[in-house]
Image 1 (cartoon, rainbow, N blue to C red):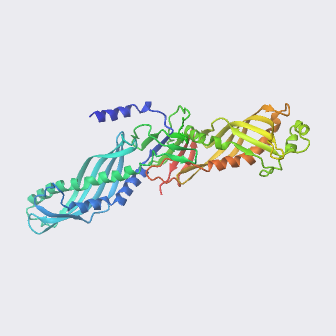
Image 2 (image 1 turned 45 degrees about the vertical axis):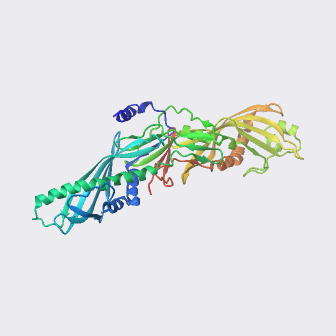
Image 3 (image 1 turned 30 degrees about the horizontal axis):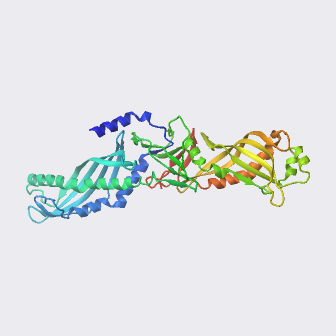
Length: 454
């Protein structure tokens, strides 16, 4: 009673739970697939039928029938429906033939068509913290019963015997099948909260934010991802201040995974140091050789300081966590940092700093999925700000460098960023989900993966 009251209170308090960094919305398409595959792959009805005729310790024989066997189990037809606030109502329609020695002598054959019904309550396992289904209220409903006994042979006695016998046999025979199938389904949640690596820099772990909820159309599982650096320090998700809500314009019964921009920001923070680079190749992409003579075309003071051209070295350091922003149909990666331009010297001498710039630029993000990883490819969208922090060549107008820095970023820096992003960000591992067919859409502050089942 106390447990039921606790669950009811949890349902009333859903508005007070922490904002999730990710959520799963599981439609009937996915749940049908999982229950059907569990039933098919486990062959549970056939196994139960095979067990029916075995004698077990403490099992009393059924009065009037001996040598009980079950054969010819029909392929089950499974019907599911969501029960708001509870879980899933399940009906398994099947049929079988029960044989044995009857109380009237000779072989008895009973052909049964039946429905097995049960409510699969969705809970959060107290030990593992994972979603779990638990069956309750299993019932057997006889749709039709036929026997090989003559219809005129004591029909009332025979019918009474069949009714009482089948109600004794079938619940113990069939209801364990529901529990066994749910065990099979529950195992497919096992990897959800396992830490998954992001290259060599850290891990991501998906943890339930609250007990899963069920509506008339779907099951919602709110997740609070834990993003942890390799050394063990946890990166806090930026305060999104908004609950994630999957848009309602998806097909009825479909399933989605939604990842917040705040969560993706925390994941990319793991990679922040990998975005620091030193670029010292004279020939970069389609650009001409980069030397102090190139810079002199924008800053005359460079020619005075370096009459003879010196190769350029550019050091880019990202000094703030990367930030992902999303609007409907578009996503940007914001990077804040410094660009230091240096003149290379011979004989392994350290290069000389020419100037240091504070920079803020953003990249256009294209998302894709490969296996269970979210991949990103970027291109320079806009150089948003450029300011001079220091200079060894005297004052100059840094805005004159806007085109030069933009080309340098696009040709030399963006390929480095894209190489770093190839590591991919791990997606939630649940119910054996294959993401390769998913449709990806950006909405306000989130990325939605509309799941396509194989």
